[in-house]
Image 1 (cartoon, helix red, strand yellow):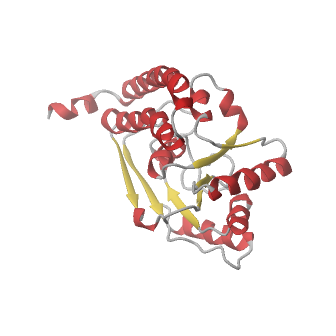
Image 2 (cartoon, rainbow, N blue to C red):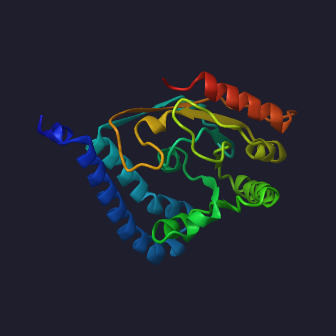
Image 3 (cartoon, rainbow, N blue to C red):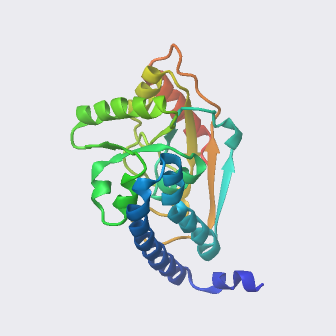
Length: 242
């Protein structure tokens, strides 16, 4: 009974506590990342940087009453692949770092300029893009993405580009599918409902269950990027957690 007494606190207070503890831990940990991270081999560095991510997910579950459920974990291929996932909040950008490790995430370059958070992020070999220049962004995804895949590192892409409200999907771009086709690797689609518990552009953290559903690998061999994007979009739409 004592274990769950914090759930009797109002949701707003628990949300504020999460915000404070999560950011404070991130600031302290990022200093150690900058001091230690560059001297570690990549995979050890990846795990070290993501100690903060693991703490944030633990805190979310213990303090805010959020349950995380993953279905289809066995569908993740061995070796390199491209992940196409819907985008609702910051939750998936954190949790995916733990679900698929190591990985390279496609993200806007401005995130690396953020004090503390950006310092740790820069150590993870992300694929950075300039979103204001579409053709340059695609070129970066293809060039950097093929290198990461060649090194055996899966690439995670949110093809909607921006966060969407729970229960809705935005237009999918074809960059991730083009990367999979050119690199000759499969695509895995991931559908989730993170916005129900971690709303975008909000400090509130709401109790409930975040479910992530992982598709069987989608073969890219002999397919056009548009076809792969449609298959991933349809799978995410059809398997969206209610």
